[in-house]
Length: 114
Image (cartoon, rainbow, N blue to C red; front, side):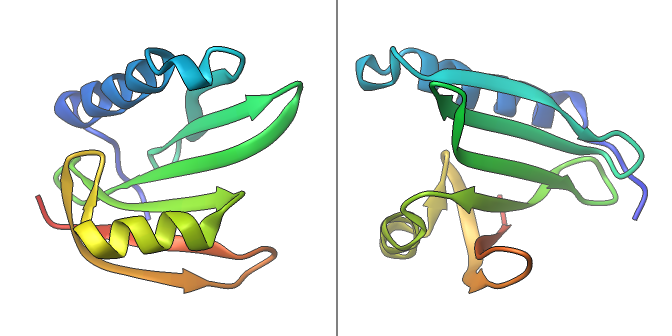
């Protein structure tokens, strides 16, 4: 897949990053927003504490540059799954499907429809 995230999508990710930074409970966490795979247009948002990754969100583009899906790796996947399944929302965007997938490690595969 070759793509990119458009300006609106990148702003959404920056807003998510800032949202984490503005939550007092995350004051001692490191929040990093970076290009995970420039060729595929995948952007990462990583939440870590004391150098240990807690959660890694990978944002994948569709052919128009919108965020098509999010892969979520790390801690408390079942809790994240339960919360997102109840609301069918992720960061203010409507979820069309969510599942737990296995690869080198388990992750949530979240498809969006916003």
